[in-house]
Length: 276
Length: 276
Image (tube, rainbow over all chains, first blue to last red; front, side, top):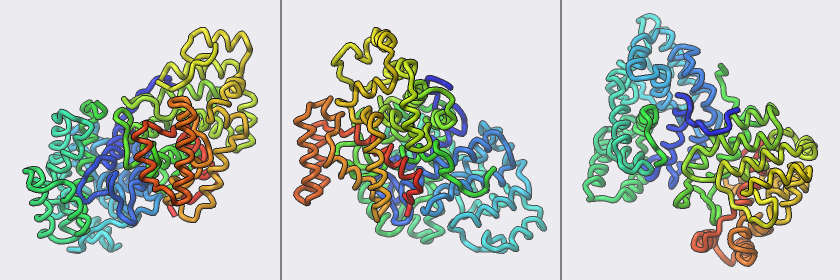
């Protein structure tokens, strides 16, 4: 037994810490944070999912299976609460990031993903409720889609390329995890780590269109959210009024929350002193 | 890898869940909760300590050492943040509860504690900052105290008996973990589990003198806190005004928070459906 503290001492532990720090950061307009729950999804669900993810994260770090199967396992292992989907999008990012070890290793891992990874990824959707748009014959809710994946020889990276335009989390697989890296650099550069996560989240909200909002409400409301986040940065609106507006319009930037978890994880890997 | 969720599947995981649920419950007058941090100790510190406790809790469940050494290990392993003491008192309860498996096993374990357990427990104080009153020659901050323990042949249970009058956490060791059990029964009987923790905490605050408040401020302020908690139960004061009064007077009922963690753990062991 180690007598003195070494937490976080592994990539799995840094991933757990990233998941916890993200949901605890406040204020995050529209998302679950210390000051706001949704009726069906509460902060407890995110933290129970974080605790429940331990064995899966260790399996990812040890590369005990391929990326698709590892995502499927993590999603299954963390759906142990009544709060619905909490970390599906986060695992799409954390699995390759933890598996790869560094960004180069991560990019090599996603390039080597297989058709069986894609099939396992589609199976993961059956384990939880995740918002997707059924735009084509690769609908994740259609059992025949798995046959289509095999027929076309589509790897998990191919699936992400296919989804990249409409899904900013999938897009990270295709662009070297650009937004996660951008967020990590912003965290590392921020002079006040204890409040940096909420600040970096707001800056991403002001610069990016959250594709979860687009899927749920269309691009007009997503554009309006971005415009208002810019107004907050420029002092024309308060973050509290943006939060109230988001809640009133059922706008929750869930994809940017996933991106933030990836960003916090990368910052922790780079030695970010979150508690200073 | 298990595909479907089984969390919490072990005593160690139920202890982690109890630690997380306790700190997330709101409102808890005077204590860290979703709506209130202390300047030096924030909710992040409690949850990081919860994550960092995993290996120690598994060591406790596997009985890899004696009670004193297990407390020392858990305190050391969770002092990995800048927030000071977060779970020292909780481990004084969780270690025998997790080790024992059930209340009978727990009571047998504390009866079998040794002088070396007492010495290890005293060493644990050096790992963190814990409020104690130096009332006698068994001052935990005095290195000579360990010699005194050995000279007198005091076991860890003897130390708890010695401390029971002034410390309600130590008292649990001497009375069959009476308040933890009372709290667990109250949680199990509560018709609304999602808000039950804050309610049971308030009822304990109205019935018990928190000895942490006594040590810090004297018994008059502890009595006043209890009187005001009763007024909240009777509708004469709001829980929000009690919380504001506690914060204004630097009153934080830290020992009852420790007791609540033990209570939540026992309730979870009994199958409490916290998420229903």
